[in-house]
Each structure stands twice: as C-alpha cells, then as structure tokens.
Image (cartoon, rainbow, N blue to C red; front, side, top):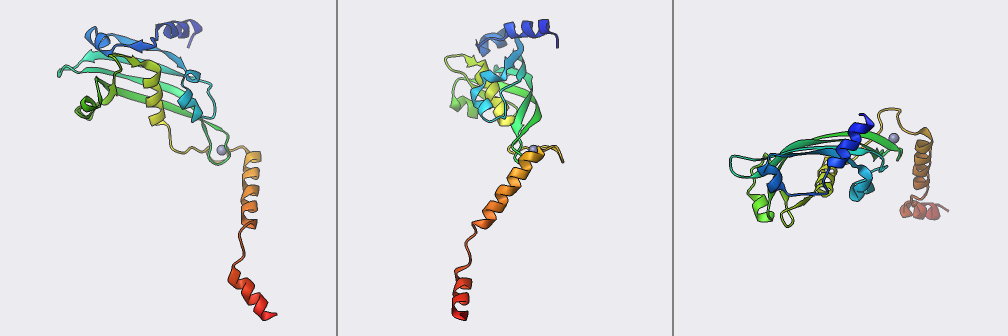
Length: 181
Ligand SMILES: [Zn+2]
C-alpha cells in the first residue's frame, strides 16, 4: 500500500460515528487504525506493532434497522504457547452489524447481525474494532512445526525437569524402607 493511500485512509477515520446518520445517507467508513491505539487488544498480543484496515458500509435495512456490513483485516503477533515467542496471525473478519439503543433491543436482532449498542446515539469506532478483533483471536496459538525458538524451548524443557524434582516421595514407601531397616 502506498504511503499516500495510507495517509488518505488515516485522515478519513472518525473517532466516533452516528450509525443513524451514516445509514440514512448510505455512507461508508474506511481507514487504518494502528493497533497501539487498542490497549486491551495489545495486552493480549505479543506486540502492539501493526494496524487494522477497517471497511464499513452503512444502510437502513427493510425492517428500518441501522446496519453496517464490511470487514476488518489485520496481522497480529500472538504469543506462541510452546516457546512464548511471537507468531504472526492473519485476521480477516467479515462484519454484519446492527446498531441498537440498548441491551433489550440487542436481544431482538436477527441472528445474521451482531448487535452493537450505541451510547448517546454514537459509537466509538476503536472500541467497536477492538471488541471484534478480541472475539476473533484464537484461544491458543503455536508456531508451525520447527518454527519455535530453540533456545526458549530448551529453557521450557529444563523447567519441566525442575518440576519433576519437587515431586514428593510416596510416604508409604518411606515407611516401608524404615520397617525394612
Ligand atoms: Zn513457538
């Protein structure tokens, strides 16, 4: 992606948006959000380096709901559960959102939509993006075969040995030894 294009996308991303206005005018929101602006997400990742490309197209559906379809694309660094090193993971999330006033309305939304509750008629874009990315993260991640950091693996296996050493001897076998003497 060219720097000029990236800068243009950056400029067009609002901090907040009013889904009713966006939908009534059939507007769209496109842009790039740096991952380091998403603190809760970064706390779950191995690195805050990277960005997420956001595309949202708004409309009012036939039942007068304010909806948005679109997608989020990002490459994030997840912690490998074997060597604790970073693993690159591609997120490509299709969105189908319905904007609602409160939790009660959220329950009445058909299954094909993810309900998003507005606050004073607005939505904080970064919060919406962050929640969707968090939901899409894998629960555990590993490097592919042989992709792990060998030094970290050696360390991990030596801590396993240490754990073996602290296993307490069976008290009955000690008793048996004492009786034998
Ligand atoms: Zn690994």
